[in-house]
Amino acid sequence: MIDHKGRIWLQLTYTADSQQWLIITADGTKEKIVNLPKDTMLTHISSHHLGVRLDDVTMALFEPIL
Picture 1 (cartoon, rainbow, N blue to C red):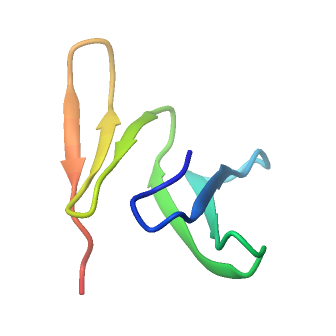
Picture 2 (picture 1 turned 30 degrees about the vertical axis):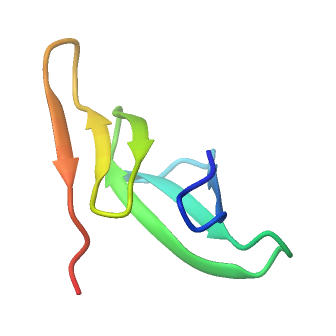
């Protein structure tokens, strides 16, 4: 996925207690890692929140902590 700033979000596939996404810039510089609840699906990235499907009927919006 690519966010509103043109950064690339790559889902890491190693086993962990959470779902981890590596955020890199277009030139490949690592910016941060985002942890989401395990067994969820990231549906969209906006400038205000992340859309995450928690199960078949529940969707959550996660906002950044500044």
